[in-house]
Image (cartoon, rainbow, N blue to C red; front, side, top):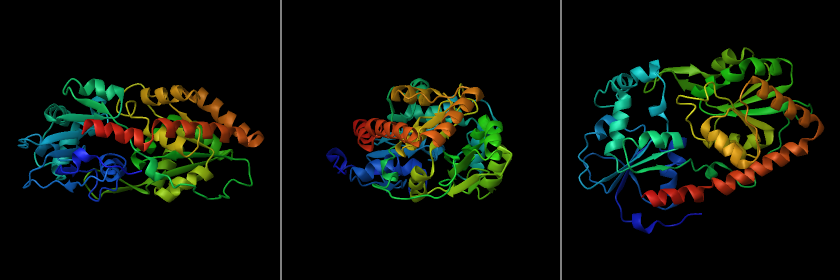
Length: 361
C-alpha cells in the first residue's frame, strides 16, 4: 500500500543505485523501492546539479563523493555488505585498484577499506543490515541505522502453480537461492549433498543467474552451471532456474525446504551478512536449514523453530528428518513452512521496513 511522505515531496533527491535501471535487488528492495512506495520523486545524480538529499548505494563512485562539495546537501550511505568485517583476501587487497582500472572509481584508492570508512565519516547517515556492521560503522559515524531488504513486492499474491517434478516420487526438493558468486557457500555441505544427489534422495534447485562476473566492472563472465557442478561433484538431480519473480514464486510450489549454508559462519564478510535470504525463503513458505551466522541465528531463534545446522552431523540429521517426513507426513512440512511464512511477513514486511526509512529521512 502506497502512502505519501509529505516531508520529502518537495525535496530534490538524487540516488546513485546498484544498477543503471534501478532494477537490481539492491535497488528495488531498498531505497529505490522505498521511494516508489512513498511516491517520492528521485533522479540519477548529476554533478552539475544541486540536491537536498543524495543517497549512495555501495556501487556509487565513493572516490568522487569523498571529496564532493555537498554544501547543504544531506548524504545517506546505504552500506549493505560487511566489507569492514572482511578478512584479508585477494579481492580485498585489489578492490580499489580493480575499481579504478575498470572505471568504477574516478580516483585511485589503494586501500578501499579506508575509503569506505572515510565515506562513512562524511555521511550524515549510514544504513547497514546487521548489528555487527553497526558496531563497526559506529567507530566512524554516530548516525547508523539497520534496515533490511523490503521483499514483499517479489511475491505474487495468490500465486497458483502446480509442479510435476518430484510429484510422483518421494524425493525431497531443496531450494538454494542467490547470486551465482555465492554458490561457493555450497562447499560447506558439498560432500553430504553429493551423496544425497547420487542416491536419488533429493532434488537440488538453484535459483540464480546463469552467468556471473569473473571480474567486477568487466564483461568477463563465468558459467554458473559449471561452477555448481564442480563444487558439488555431480550433475545428477540438480536443476537450474533463472532468477526472476515468476520463478521465485514457482519455488514455493516446487520445493519442500530451503538451505542456507555458510563455509565460515564465525567471522568474515559472509558470517556478517544479514538474514534477508532466510526471510525470503520463509515468505515462500519453506522451512530453511541454515548455518548459524549471527543474523540468521537471531532470526531463527526468534521464530521459535530451530533449524540451525552447526556442523555436517546436524545437516545430515535435519535433512534425514525432512526426507522421512516427505514420505510419511508432508502436512507437517507445510505446517512448519506456514508458521515461518506468517512470522516473516509479521516481522519483516515492507511496511515495517519502509517506516525505518521514514525515520532516517
